[in-house]
Length: 64
Image 1 (spheres, rainbow, N blue to C red):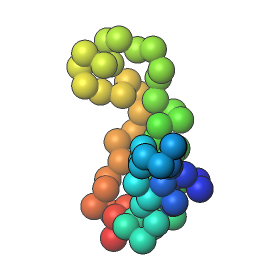
Image 2 (image 1 turned 30 degrees about the vertical axis):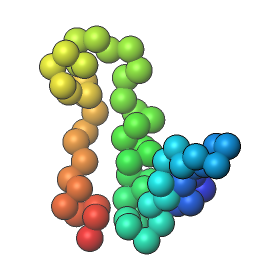
Image 3 (image 1 turned 180 degrees about the vertical axis):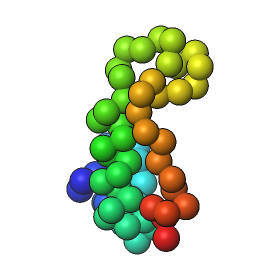
């Protein structure tokens, strides 16, 4: 969670900006949980643009 909150820098280059203050900790955990449950190697789901059986996140509720 530290990388999400503070961002990631390598050799003086920002690889990922920090999201602390832009979204709640609950939103960060929800995104992490979503990424963790997505199938890693599901070509059919990728072609369809779906995450297989993963529940969709409602960002309007998360990003309040």
